[in-house]
Amino acid sequence: MNIARLIVVVVAALLPLAAPAQGNLRFTSVDVYIDSATPFAAWQFELSDRGNSAMLVVGVENGASPAFDRAPYYDRQAVQTGTADRIVVADYSLAQAGDLPAGRVRIATVHLAFSGATEPDIELRLVTAVDADGRVADAAISFESPAGSAQ
Amino acid sequence: MERPTDNDNEPQLPATLIEALKAEDQPTALITSRADRALEAQAAAHFAARRSTARDWRPAWYAAAAAAAVALLLVVPREPSINEGIGAQDVFYADVDASGRIDIADVLAVARSGRATQPDIDAFAARVVTLSPPGTAR
Amino acid sequence: MHRADAMDRQSDEELVRLCNVGSADEAEAAFGSLYRRHRDFVLRVALRYVSDNDSALDAVQETFSYLLRKFPPGGAGLTLTARLTTLLYPVAKNNAISLQRKAARSGNADQDPDELPSAADRSNDERDVLSLLAGLPADRRELVTLRFVDDMSLQDIATALGLPLGTVKSRLHAAIADLRKLPQVKEFFEN
Image 1 (cartoon, rainbow over the protein chains, first blue to last red):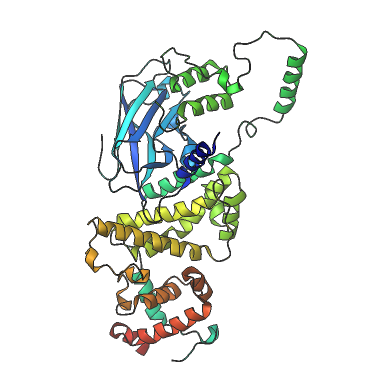
Image 2 (cartoon, chains in turn orange, purple, red):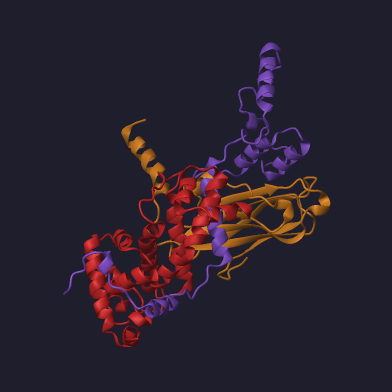
């Protein structure tokens, strides 16, 4: 590896760790909902920012269903190192079919920091939601944030 | 101007004035439960790296059983596997439901099959949610 | 809940130790205790410098995010050489001031950006939250507040403000002399 490439690699590695200037961070959070006609046993979504708010994910919480009562899966290392400018969140449940959630359910809350002039323009994509037998559920995903924005 | 010398001569304020100042300084905003939860979630993510992998949950007899299993493998020849040379968690990383994509539905299928240990399932799920390097296709 | 209760009884030094070297669960619980114990103080400090509640809450969150980054992984670990509030005060103050100035520049704050004081003296960013101290120069108002409202020791104030102890003593003495002359507090000294 020549010197120029080495420098690029080193700088690229350091950039994500450069914290925003003190006092420039705002915080918000996004409640993510699945609305499913049938009980679902696993779900996965991806959340990103369409705009240029310099958004970073700083934490993810589980939602309201007892069937999914632990912290969901997400890239913790990316969140820890301040490089999560988008996030993939997923979870599964081995609960009995009768205990699985249906209808409109909050599945996660994603906590965000941003340093741009405007709040993040959230883009939310449901990757999959399946029932206990692995069949794709008839489900839609949406979000709400305290600032009032919603999809 | 008189110079103060030590704490014994530190000027004091009347107790009533101190009380009034503290009353004025009471916050007009409240820390919301959402703000509390945001910090909790941040702390959970931050300290998550200290969670060790399989070691913590395995019962005490596991080490002996694992050693016996390894010994058996060394003594008994086995059929070469198509997964030869891949890490344990990678054995399960596959499009189990043939959906065309490896996602949490495949993790659910493996979890329901009973074939994998919890650490293997967790490792599979962790790979599913790992963010790709910036600039690469999603 | 049981763990949280037990943690809440630990000293700041012990909680910091657990944040440095405890297990994931211990560190999370310890940090939670530190947060619950000191969040109101940080909020009060923030509200002295920002004009809206949302900015104050953001300043609180950013202050504790800063504290969190001190602990491994990522941080080298924190050694408490003074009370934790001594460390949190300047962080909270600077976060709040930066947020207020940013809001003013973008036109979202109550304050007219043209009325903002120069960047050279950050203590002038303090709002007149304490009307009883109105009329006191900003740096003296800050000293009186830290000593008598926040109950900081003179040494802690010196550490928090980055001043020699002798300077703090001298300025506090002058601050109280000024305070005695303010019409709105005279009756307190006369009673």
